[in-house]
Image 1 (tube, rainbow, N blue to C red):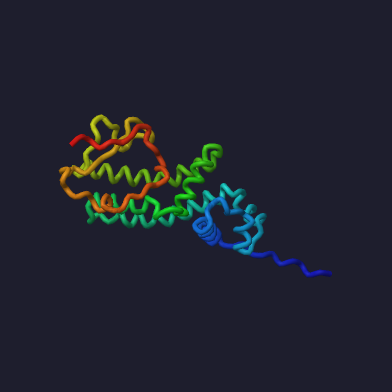
Image 2: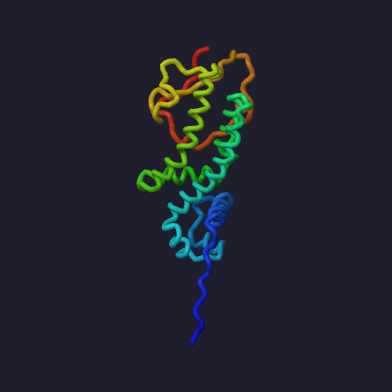
Length: 208
């Protein structure tokens, strides 16, 4: 009689997330398959599907794991109340924007955005991940307004207005046109694929 087969233990989920993100960074999302990822981890595609249900769910959970790590960094940076609000805003933007072409975190964001309209679970997961970013940005802008560092565009809704409200709300430092921009503005521009809550009307800088 053949001995019973030993069941292979499941990999920790964090190891799966890290492997998925690394594979996306190296090869791009188009080449990421459950079979290929499973082979890399010493698991079958069926084993991965058993734990995650679908590739969409794996992408969402990988993004959630990645954003949780980044969220801890963001919380630490924004908690540094000894820094001026503009400096904390610059650090927020440094964490938010992609690090460069092929940033796996932004690739994950784009995929979750594109897939979420047809799936309630993905859509809710996307909103859950986006909300802390939006709340922190609203708090920074509100603080800037309250301290006079930022000024609102005339006629724009307040920073607590719902996403996609028109006209777009924005704020700019209350400094003269000849003054030096904050550190973030002096860095080479980086263009993210799109913000999580796009404005329904173009933002504009207020008249000097």
